[in-house]
Length: 349
Picture 1 (spheres, rainbow, N blue to C red):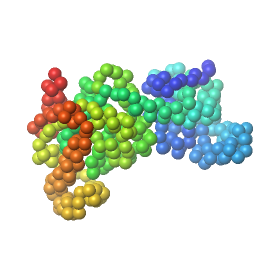
Picture 2: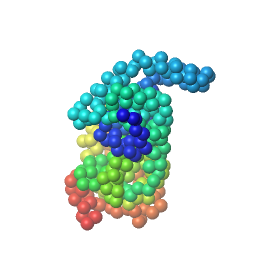
Picture 3: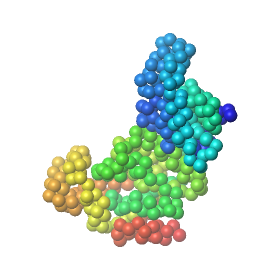
Picture 4: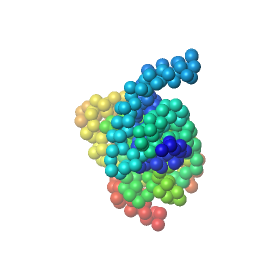
């Protein structure tokens, strides 16, 4: 069977059902990758440097010979790893997808080996580099968005999870592995790199819109920065121009919700998080919030922080060019996702 080459979207569609082998070096894979891809490096990071040096300083032929020295002893393990990934009954054809950086020699070598052994092999035209170009172009393209807004502690993430049962929802905080607030990183996995966050954004947005291209995609009204990653500017500009449904929930109810949400976190880590925003929070408020926290008075500590975040969110809200036309308020008595969903349905019906 000949190795078949696919463009990015055809490759991603097939990857929903079959394993993807990323044969770039471990360092390349760790930095950013196609979501769901398995790392099966043809060369280690050091081996890649040696081959690259031979290519630049000597010749293409010399680089290939050096590469073959590394490749030879790994051929059987590569086949066995591919077998392990295709051993389930859902993949009787032993179909597998392969890519490297530019769709060149690395993916070509692995694809040849697996095809020779009897796998049905597909490779990505242009490799990961082509995928990255697609990612950048995709989040720049026009998208129909609807934003769910509200002050900190409004339970917006909870509402979006319920909304996802019937609507298209993109959870930016889940993609960023950060809840967006001072304590947003606590209890969360390590954040992706900026490049990987962008990969995840375009990938998940693409497959959401495949479900229903005409439906709006719901997402939370975020600052451009979530932890240490940034929403790509072109996409964030579309968010700023999108309709905004604002959950108007009493301060004390939001404070109670936050106390339940974050009250059990490690206190010293919470102190460190507060110290990171002390320049914006102010020295007195920082000192008082930390003192309350160490006394075990979570509620009063959070009261200081919530007032700060309310001012911060209001400032961002008022910076919108067409706020009057964009904003629609929904008054809610409490932080309750199911009740809020009913209110949203009433507004849109």
